[in-house]
Length: 530
Ligand SMILES: *[C@@H]1O[C@H](CO)[C@@H](O)[C@H](O)[C@H]1NC(C)=O
Ligand SMILES: *[C@@H]1O[C@H](CO)[C@@H](O)[C@H](O)[C@H]1NC(C)=O
Ligand SMILES: *[C@@H]1O[C@H](CO)[C@@H](O)[C@H](O)[C@H]1NC(C)=O
Ligand SMILES: *[C@@H]1O[C@H](CO)[C@@H](O)[C@H](O)[C@H]1NC(C)=O
Ligand SMILES: *[C@@H]1O[C@H](CO)[C@@H](O)[C@H](O)[C@H]1NC(C)=O
Ligand SMILES: *[C@@H]1O[C@H](CO)[C@@H](O)[C@H](O)[C@H]1NC(C)=O
Ligand SMILES: *[C@@H]1O[C@H](CO)[C@@H](O)[C@H](O)[C@H]1NC(C)=O
Ligand SMILES: *[C@@H]1O[C@H](CO)[C@@H](O)[C@H](O)[C@H]1NC(C)=O
Image (cartoon, rainbow, N blue to C red):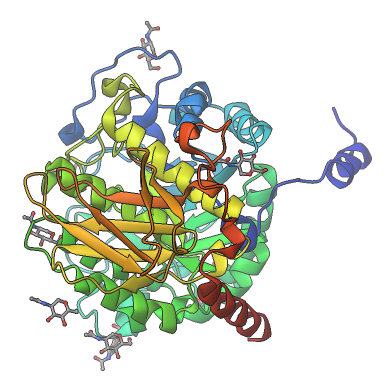
């Protein structure tokens, strides 16, 4: 056994090298995993009916075994579902296979493997230069009520909970009835009398201290690089700064709303939020051919000016485990590829939910938690290739321009109502919602240099910017998007359109879009002084 002194020296001399900050996360790209549904340790093809809401057998070792699959698509971070011990019993809404029904924050959920398995996952990720983000729930615990009476307060056996094992650790039981009353949202309970989500009393300073010291040790023990925090709007805002500081790593919160003003308050107390307010108009813009593309611009520009750091560092996603998958709305390939591309041109951190790349179509919870092993982790398919291309293009843009990550995406007005052009130099996303049988065209001036050669990285088709007007003109094939980079940003030994890398020769990326670069330098300076 280690003596205390040698344990301490290990801790001091083998410091946790990653423990990444908000800044370090900004260039990352995240793959979201529901551990129970990602991979079995032995890769057997276990049955898994989503509507049964039972554990299907996925494990941390399963994730380790399939890191190539994730990394091959260009992701350099994973977000895994919660890891702590959950309620074992059946509940009115099935079993806690997803991990969001905490009973004990000091024990791990043994369904996903051992403590060593989890540590091996962190080690395997770090050996590849990848980050580990872990999902945590601070707002509530879960226990079945001791009787089926719906009279409040209900009785609970608190003894199975840890460390909050007394009735006084929780707010008095009441269910949230008024989302316009923030006290009601924070102090009443989520859930219902069949499955009450027991709302922890985060007004109690003893409870707060417990949480803060827990999170410091949790992050260190499991070598966690970032935390995704569940149901953030259900805890008072001034709880979060001390908690985030005790965590010492990047924190990104779930604030489920389309209200930008409401969301922006949480960007003051945590590093970042999941960008739900942009997600709503994006889904609506692309899930039919009559969707409203201008609503995207409107939400993005409002968020850019309202959030503490604009959209920089926010989590940009098309799908997650809480919402119907995009392909439950439409399976039109053109629409799907456009919608999937958006998070990769976004100012924030792109997040892709497992199964999206395999074209899964599950609707609302529990149907959107399909086991990934049914896909065979197939890599040679269209959507996987598409995701790899947009991920790589973003990485090339990060590498080619030191200001890419601090330049706000901007919208270049289009006369075609089915077309939208989003510029984030040196990247330009030409998106459309006309669908695979429609036609769309874009015309973009002032982004690239006159006569410059640029490439659509999805097809490797090159375009020459008009040498007198400086206009890039392009049209869509089968309603697909075009993701443009200057050929000078590509690498001749790279995996993306290597054959056209640097074909223009004349221009360097740094000469591209000087105007935008200047603006971003000013923006960067302003950010520094805020
Ligand atoms: C594979 O693992 C699952 C889940 O742990 C288990 O139920 C199953 O029996 C194993 N299959 C084989 C062939 O070992
Ligand atoms: C409550 O009802 C459910 C469903 O009928 C049942 O499974 C459960 O055992 C009941 N719980 C108690 C405490 O009686
Ligand atoms: C705060 O929590 C502690 C620990 O559970 C408890 O002893 C105390 O009664 C609580 N205080 C209030 C005001 O509820
Ligand atoms: C808001 O909710 C709290 C907690 O449920 C309640 O005590 C308070 O009366 C509500 N305020 C209003 C104005 O309804
Ligand atoms: C959005 O949130 C703000 C701040 O909480 C609130 O004042 C406003 O009424 C909300 N807007 C809508 C449309 O609900
Ligand atoms: C599209 O969205 C914009 C911005 O939110 C809005 O002003 C416009 O009225 C919407 N158009 C339609 C047809 O709904
Ligand atoms: C598009 O998404 C919106 C928002 O989720 C939803 O209300 C609407 O029904 C969807 N449309 C289609 C055609 O699925
Ligand atoms: C971007 O630069 C990093 C660091 O040099 C390198 O490891 C990575 O392969 C580059 N990405 C691409 C897509 O070329």
